Each structure stands twice: as C-alpha cells, then as structure tokens.
Amino acid sequence: MSTKKFQSQLRTFANASCIALTETGQAQAATQTRSPSMTEHTFDRAPRTRLLRADDRRTTTDAVFDELHDEIITLELPPGTKLSEADVARRFGVSRQPVRDAFNRLSRMELLTVRPQRATEVKGFSLERIADARFIRLSVELEVLRQACVNWTAAKARALDENVDQQRRCVETSDPETMRVLDYAFHRRICELADYPRAFEAIYAQKQKVERLCVLGFEKKSRELHLVLGDHERIARALKSKSFDRVEAATRKHLSRLDDTIADVHRAHAGYFEADADAD
Image (cartoon, rainbow, N blue to C red; front, side, top):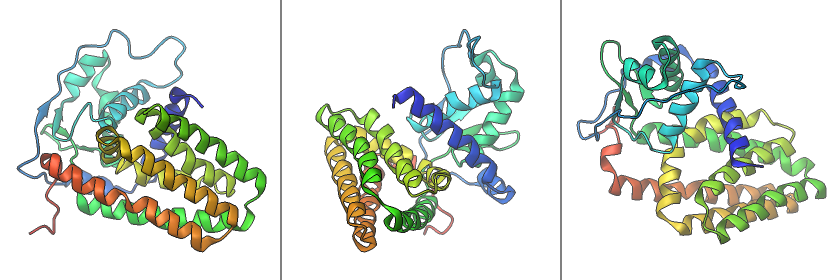
C-alpha cells in the first residue's frame, strides 16, 4: 500500500472520529487552559496557488482540514502555534467559513484550542489526555485481539505477515515515515482479520492523540523502529499460537513503550506540554 493512499484513509478515519465526539468534549477543548511555558509560534506560510485540483472530490473544508491536520501531526505546526481564520483563508485562497469548519473539526480531535475573539492555537500535549487515550485504546485493542485469537487461521497469519515483512524492509532502510504508515496498517489489519474493521476507528481516534509523540520518537531514535518491529513480530507470532495470554502480554509491552517516549519528549520539549488541571 502506498503512503499517499494510506494517508487518505487516515483522513477518512479522522473525519469519522470528529463526528463521534460529544458536545461536552467540544466545550472542554474550547476552554482548555495552556501552560505559561508553552512555546509560542506564529502561523507564517506562503500562500497556496490552488488548494483543490480540478479532479479533487473533497469539499473545501475537507481540503483545509487535511492540510492542517497533516501539518499538526507531523509537527510542521508545533504546539503553541497561533492560527487565525483570516491568515489561513488567505493562505489557501478560500473564504473563512471552511477554515472555521476545519478549526472546529480539529478542536473536536483535541488538536486545536479554539477560543472566540482570541487566537486559535495548536494544542500542546496533556499527560492527562494522553493517559486517557492510552487506556481507551488498550481496552479496545485487547478485546479485538481476544476475538482474533478465536478465529485466527493460517491464511490470516499470512496476511498479517505481509505487513510485517514490509516493516522489516523499512527498518533495513531506516525509513521512519513509511514505518509510521505501516504501523497504522498493522493494527488496522488485525481489526479487519478479527472481523471487527470498525473497531479501528476507535483505536485510530485514540492513537491520533499521541501520534505527535510517536513522530518525535521515530525521528529522534532509530532504535525505536527496531523496537516497534520486534513488538509487531511478537504479536503476530502470539496470534499464530491463538493464546490470548501471549497476545495480551506482547500488546501491553508494545503499548507501554510510549512511557519512555513521553519522558524523553518531556525532557527535550517541556514547552510542548500543558499544565493539567490537577497538576501541583
């Protein structure tokens, strides 16, 4: 699967995730306070000559959302970056309404803080939100894997091994960008093979909340690629054994690796983190 095709699928999941969030979540996103130490940046990008190609079937709002989402996730727009509807509209050559709609979607994904009459900002990392996202993801993923163990077959094992083989080639060539794409594909493929494809939407929604941390981890440490590959190989082998105990142990180990990444990013980029409500 090409990187471009998979990124398109990720955007589809992103749009679906927005719909599922509640009005309460919107209000929380709009009122989240920012740590005084949050690094501040301004939005300064060259205008685009054309946002949508003639054959592009996306709406203008979708196109603006996709561009901003990619730039936030890849940290081209780091936490603390200030955005204005007028500046973004001018950059993309569109009216302010699709920009406003895109901002609201990103706010519901907890990637932007939108405050009326004040500058919109790229949200920082929150240890509290990260912990919640990891708990929800683990709960959903383990249940998917429990069901996968029940109906796992040799044919399904071969299908998952194809992805793992691609990951090995990525590690050999030190390609973190493609590895991130294949990481998503690995977890999505398990949901499909377990006969619960829509479960990946829930996993994706939570994974997105820590994706920026993973980007920093992959880019800063080549050893992270080897660790992720090793974890995926163990999960694939455990599924072949159809032992949920083995699958659960391998999955918990895999998802716990984010602990070190969070600690490393916090040390290197303390300004990217917000002060949580219950912080001392």
